[in-house]
Length: 118
Image (cartoon, rainbow, N blue to C red; front, top):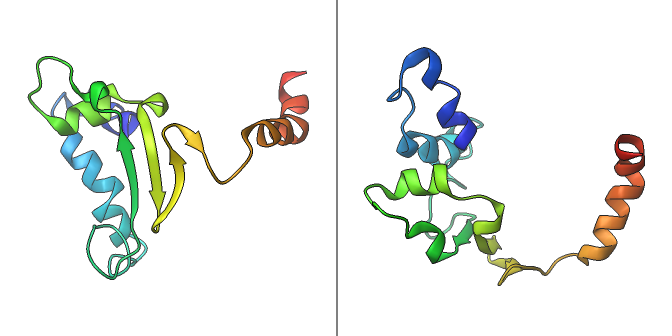
């Protein structure tokens, strides 16, 4: 999201792509593009919902004018505390629940790492 917000600014100016617009593109507008907005894109009964919970202290920077800007420009992967995908916990308290991280890291290295990092 940060890249989507920043990439337009040199050519079109600092107000070209607001953080709120970027978040809307990643959620509701992103669901409309492939025609899936009846099933995803908003949090409401009957829809598949994925939620990412951010650490509260990551968003408590001063000044606190705009929550959208804080999310787009001030958070990263370390800011994610929980992930819930379609009602199933995937990450809880920063712990990946669906895969063994050590095994996953080894598999990624064996399949990709040797090629790119050896």
